[in-house]
Image 1 (spheres, rainbow, N blue to C red):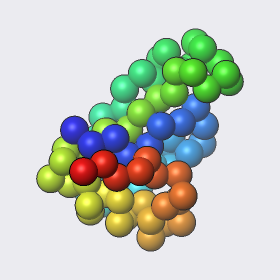
Image 2: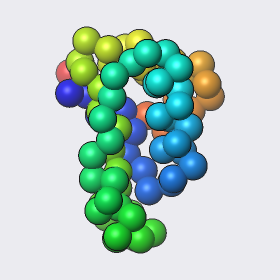
Image 3: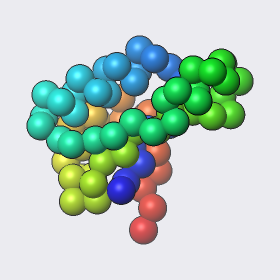
Length: 76
């Protein structure tokens, strides 16, 4: 799995979910409940993961929607 976004921002998380659903890209959100419990300290952020095979398409889709700056750095 490829980590696209790590955030405690519920609005951003909702936007990412909607964008990936619109593109038909499968994804999972992990640590969402922990990030809500933890609050705004930023220690336990929710993470959006996509299959490696869909990572480039997902990154492109989110970049086209103006949130490329929110994406996690690509790792080799």
